Length: 66
Image (cartoon, rainbow, N blue to C red):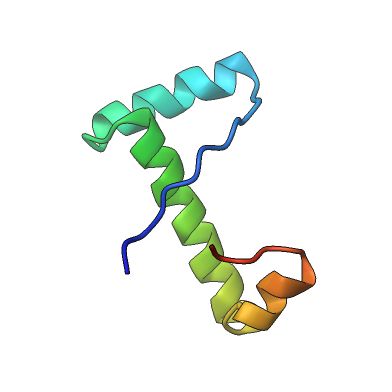
């Protein structure tokens, strides 16, 4: 099964976005890929601390995979 990429609008402080651009460029990633990388690190950190987020956890917040 193919992974579906969702679009999500993110509102952020302009200075923070500019700083993220510097980091992304240094890491040779697009700004979008840098955000994705950081979000994945955050999820990994959360799951290491609290356990894996399950399908049941996702269902509790109303997320259902199509």
